[in-house]
Amino acid sequence: MKILVTGGAGYIASHTNLELLNAGYEVVAIDNLSNSCMESVQRVEKLTGKKIQFYEGDILDKEYLLRIFAIEKIDAVIHFAGLKAVGESCAIPLKYFNNNVSGTITLLEAMKESNVQNLVFSSSATVYGDPVSVPVTEDFPLSVANPYGRTKLMIEEMLNDLYQSDSTWNIAVLRYFNPIGAHESGEIGEDPNGIPNNLVPFVAKVAAGVLDTINVFGDDYDTPDGTGIRDYIHVVDLALGHIKAIEKLVTNPGLVTYNLGTGVGYSVLDIIHNYEKACNKKLPYKVTARRPGDIATSYADSSKALRELGWRAERSIDKMCEDSYRWQSRNPNGYLCK
Ligand code: NAD
Ligand code: UFG
Image (cartoon, rainbow, N blue to C red; front, side, top):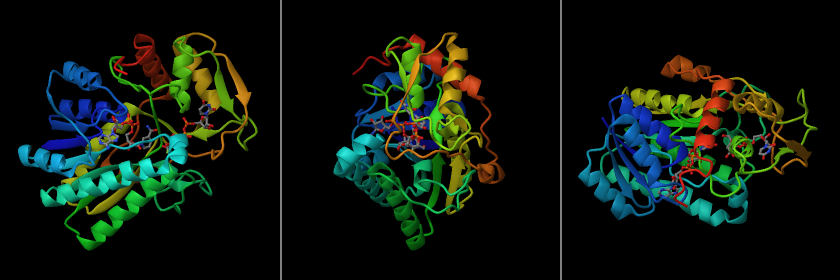
C-alpha cells in the first residue's frame, strides 16, 4: 500500500514514516517545510534503508496535489500538515484558519477528484476543552478555547458532514493527547522553532544546556502537587497508532474517532523529576503564573482504540524522557536547517 503523508517532514510524521516503512508500506510525503527540515526525511531513509518520495509543496496548492495523485497511486492519506502553536493562533488566527481549514478542504477536494477516499486525520485532545471529568472518552462534549483548537474542531465537523454526504469515505480521526519523546536511535525528534511552547521540548533544552530555567506555569491547580496534569504519550506509540488506523480503514469502517493516549496523567513536576533521572542532573525550575487558557487535568480513556484497533501505548514515562534526552543531547540545536 502507498500512503501519502502530508506534513511529512514534521515531528509526528517522521516517526510515523519510519514505522510505515518498517511495516512494508510505501511512503510519499508532501511538506512545505514551514516548520521542518528535509533532514528529517533523509534520516528516516537512512534509518530504514528505504526511500520516501518527497514533494516540497503546499497542501493549499490543489494543482500540485492533483499532480501527486496522478503520478503516485495513493491508497490512503495521513494528514498531519498544519500549524500548531496555540499562542500564535491567537495572534494570527486567519493564517491558522487558512492553512489548517482551507488546506484540509483543498486536500479533500483533490482526494475526491483523484478517487482516494481513505483518510487519517491528526486531531487533538484540545477539542475536549476543559473536560468535566477524567479520563476523557470520545463521546465527551467538545469545545475549544483558542483558534488552533477551533481549526481542529471545524475540520472534525467538516469531516462528519462530508461523510454524511458520501459514505464511500473512510476516515479515522485520531485525537492525540501529549506526544513527547523521540525515536530511540536519537536521530529523529521534535525540533521546534525558537523557544519551545510545550513543556517537554523546553525541559529538554534546559537539560541540554541550551536554556537556563524551566518555568512551571502555576502550582495552585486542584491537583495533588498543584501543577497541571497531562497524558504524555511516546511519539513512537503514537506513530504505531497510525499504522493500526490505516489497517482499520482497509475494513471500510466509515468515520471512526479514537483517543490516543496512555490513560495515565503526570504533573509538570513529575515530568521534571522523571527527566532529571533520564539526564542524571538537577534541572532548575521556578514557579510562575498560570498560562492563560491552561486547564488543570486531562488524560485519556483509550480503551476504544484497544478494542477496535488492537492498539495501546506501551512505552513508559521513563522511556519517553530517556529517548527525548538522547535526541536533544545529540542534536542540541535540532536539525540545523533553520
Ligand atoms: P509539526 O509542525 O512538526 O508537523 C507539521 C508539518 O506540517 C510541518 O512539517 C510543517 O512544515 C507542515 N505544514 C504545515 N502547513 C503546511 C502546508 N500548508 N502544506 C504543507 N505542509 C505544511 O507538528 P507535529 O507535532 O508533528 O503535528 C502534526 C499534526 O498533529 C498537526 O496537525 C498537529 O496539529 C497535530 N497535533 C499535534 C500535537 C502535538 O502536541 N505535537 C498534539 C495534537 C495534535
Ligand atoms: N507547562 C509549563 N511550562 C512550560 C510549558 C508548559 O509548566 O514551559 C505546563 C502547562 O501549563 C501544562 C503542561 O505543562 O500544564 C503541558 O503543557 P504543554 O504546552 O506541553 O501541552 P498542552 O497540554 O498545553 O497542549 C498540547 C499542545 C496542544 C494540544 C494538547 C493536546 O500544545 O496543541 O497538547 O494534544 F492540543
